[in-house]
Image (cartoon, rainbow, N blue to C red; front, side):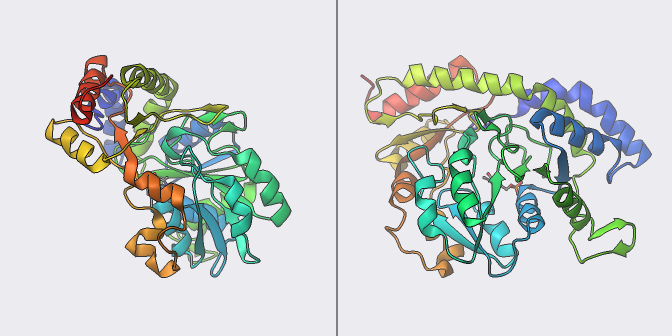
Length: 367
Ligand SMILES: Cc1ncc(COP(=O)(O)O)c(C=O)c1O
């Protein structure tokens, strides 16, 4: 019972993708081209944004989005303590400083903690739409307007998620996403994108990601090489056509877990934020004695994982930021109890029952 099985997704799209790959291969259309442009247009239409700029991966997408809104060396960027390290890496790669805040009961950025983290160097705040949920962008907007901050969404884990604020990745001036293969909209390799309604930001990202040029060998600035691989575009186009169907299958699977695990003493089920249309990138329960439960599941051949075992402020890579244990109690406590169960669109009822049985055995029987 794998944690993530992408084989069924690949099988569904094989007949659409292979002929396009063959054409790209024989015509050597590897960089840019009509497939990339078509995917960017289709994803922009799906999200309802003016521009999608495909780039090399989600970390680059975040870095490019930060750069596009003018964040630079010495600026402070507020991010949640519970997120994948890339949210912070993209900040430090441009010489800016990640300023961490705790998370709320949904393990999303705690908006009520943001104001206290603002200094005169703060330029941006990053709501991370973690686990397939959407963070509370509307509540952030008031604070951002008061302090002249840019909101940059990290939508890597939430393709297709929405709330009353709109689609994840389309709620604010600029957003970044990842198409890492395991994401809800995943490529067959690394890929990412920046989404924005800001024409200047879109032009900046497109040129910066192409060595700072819009005309070949004319470089307005020293940029980077981070383009969406043309071979990924047909995969993303085929998967985008199925994204809503697959997200709805994830919702059904989440409901099944909810009924299978109801009444398991010691298991705390995820509670989506009100108004949030969760796309269940991950199904994260909380259990005491989590490490033993994880070992039991692994021994029983059931894939499970932890997202994330160490909050950013306790990660060796960011020790130099000077945070101490105890500063972000919700993130720290969650890191001891969170457990991600297998979740993917084609997971079967039998597989979910196997997960529930494994959990019951580990917990000493369910009531
Ligand atoms: C929340 C979050 N942000 C950023 C990233 C970075 O994306 P990538 O792995 O494509 O660089 C990821 C992906 O793993 C992620 O989960």
